[in-house]
Image (cartoon, rainbow, N blue to C red; front, side, top):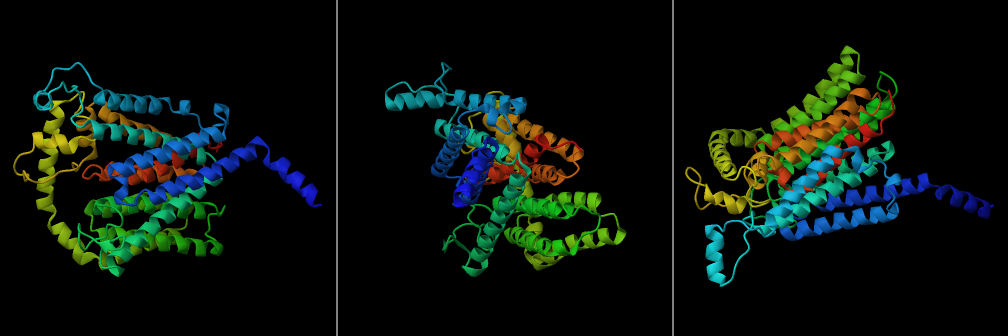
Length: 465
């Protein structure tokens, strides 16, 4: 009997479909581990962790290629399925490589002085910091490979659900760690005394706004899971057997919202509310038809927001009171960054070179001794680094994938929550990036790309309505 079962199991697992399914599950776990570990420490911003993250994603991609035996026919979603995204990313990485290459350009004053000091010719390059630009090229390659892996894993609905679930609880775990570090461990960083942003939640990140974006993306994932639970009931009426699961997700969402308010990040709080509400509003519109059902659902959502807002109202009011002064400085920094863009509008100053290039245009009212590592606008920083044309390519890539997810949401009868999660993630990341730099942090980018890939993959593999 045992031998018969063994032979039957062996035949069943040797079929190509089952092999592919097993490979997909393994790489879903690896993707989850990458997202879980990447925020430690400082969101993988330090160069060493950036190179390590790139190596980990590169090796994972190579292992995946070996697992499918380099057979393109076994890919769930081929890169050629999104030719615009593939072409734009290739040109972006190509420009980054050109920026670090020695070129026969007229030597600038800095290059001339360096040549005289060293007693030899110093190659002229577009980038004013070749090491930072090389790291940026590695990061963009990492993001492309990571998105490719997520698309393959999330092409099947069961694995998309598994990945979305894992991402949500990863965000909840980091939210709990941030709250414990703030309130239970005397405002520490991984158990050590914290020397930055005292009195607010930062978790393992280096800035509160970065943690807030991470929490907001996690809340979007949680709202998507709620939508899937309700949508799966197969009826217009909510059955009681879904209540425990819904309560569990609502608890996780409460933790994420509490952590976001503990960061006291103004725009972070706004997007942490808007993102999940977009998904849950679609759920109410699509699923609940009774008046009282909609009233109860909307009241529960706003009730959670009001309770958490009241808890942190005093600290939030202090931050709102400083909005005018902070806004003046950020607006000045953005205007001066635009001046930097106009000095090299086509080739840029080099990927990742903003901290080096910005002092060339910095003036009052900004403190001349202050160190501006990032500008408070992702879009301006992209244009400063890569020029107006190529600097727009990463944004266009996101919009192309978001459009795919949106089409899948409109046309799908049962898988629409995955597409709405992707759209809400784009809203959260895109809106916060107008005034902050969260998407310059690799761990936040990985979380965002995973959510975007889930919605895109399900749009590719959806069945007709």
